[in-house]
Image: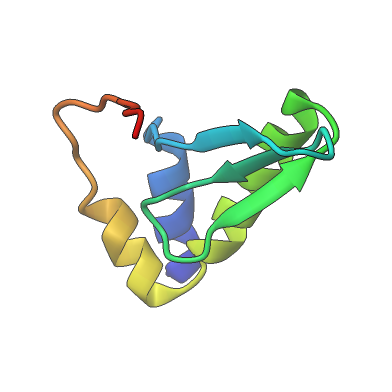
Length: 84
C-alpha cells in the first residue's frame, strides 16, 4: 500500500522548488526547501539535479514527508534576492 501511494504521488507530476548555488569550490549545491534537510550537490548542474531527485525519492519514504508532499499545492512560487 505504501509503495502504491508513493508511485501515485511521483506520477502526478508534482513540481517541487529547489535552490541551486555554485559554491566557492565550483560545486553546485541544491536544496529542496519543502523537506527539512533535503539537499545534495554535484560537479555539474545536471549531476546536482539528478542527485537531489534521488534524495527527494528517499525523503518521501518517510510518512511525515509523504503527507507534506501530498498536501503541497502552491499557487505561486517566486525567488527574490536582496542586497544588504
